[in-house]
Length: 316
Image (cartoon, rainbow, N blue to C red):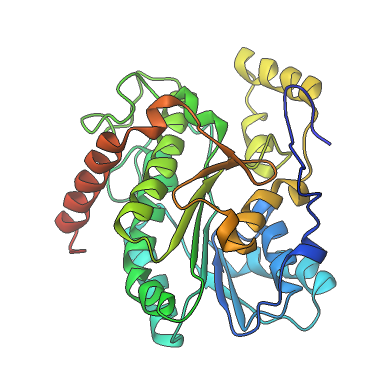
């Protein structure tokens, strides 16, 4: 399990089939639940009797494909399609409105979806494509769902899990560059743009924990996992892609099922064992992360900046 280059600390001998408790009554959202780690997360949670899981994807066709595997794992689970494009604030608002109108509670939000290695571009709302999708999209979704999450936290154990990455260590000097994230950042390598979005995921979880201690908010590194996000990157004929492929062959990739374990652990493990605002690596190991990811002045700066941006777009 894992390797020197792709470490897994399994001190809990984690087995989701045994360790995930009964989830009766709970409502769950998993973004990017149609493939990779997200689909594996949905499949495991669905086995434990939740009231409803929303599997988000950009199209119903992707949901239908994913449900073949989900139905094999949990034939009777209530897993519903929620259309969501995290690169579009309008799509995020529509999805959040549907959840709020259809439910009187929300117990677990797994902000899992992500992109990596894309060429310079902007989202529909004008943000660097990695930062706009991986961070701003999830931050807005969380913001819009917070009233329902806070209401649920009055009588339930509510969790938010941001799927980050050890790639957060590739964030640029300065950590968060507000003057750059509204540009395509074409002068930076895509890994740097990705790193900035992933360190933002960690800082966002830390700030959520500070502002809303009644909700248990964490961020996770799933491990180096064989997923479609890497397959997409490896279609490029570049020295960096070949070097990364060689490294992955040495490191030993985790399966998507194992890649989901830390998200599942943070979503359902005993509350007293999980640190609010913590960053976790496989499996359920509390990690400091890069020193910059611990800077609460930067997390506050990021929060205040994103809230200003949301207000500009009409999301007060």
